[in-house]
Length: 98
Image (cartoon, rainbow, N blue to C red; front, side):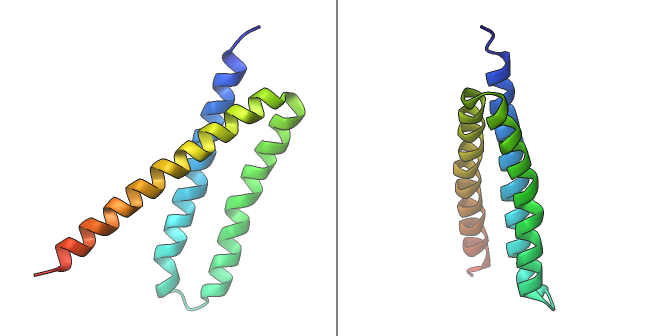
C-alpha cells in the first residue's frame, strides 16, 4: 500500500487551508472599506466554502484515510494562520503606539 495518496491528501488540505484562511483574512480586512459588507461576507463565504467542499466530497468518495489527512493539513493551516494573524496584529498595535 502506497503512502503517496495520503501525502497528496495532506498537501491538498494545506492548499485548501491556505485558500480558505487567506480568503478569510482578505475579507475581514476589506469589510470596513466595503459599501456592502453583508454582501461581501456572504459572497466570500461561498467562494471560500464551495471549492473546499468539492475537494472534500471527492476525497471522501476515494478513501476515508485520504480525507483524514486532508483534514489534518487543513486544520494545521488554520492553526498556523491564526498564530500568524495574531502576531501581525500585535506588531501593528505596537507600531502604532508612540
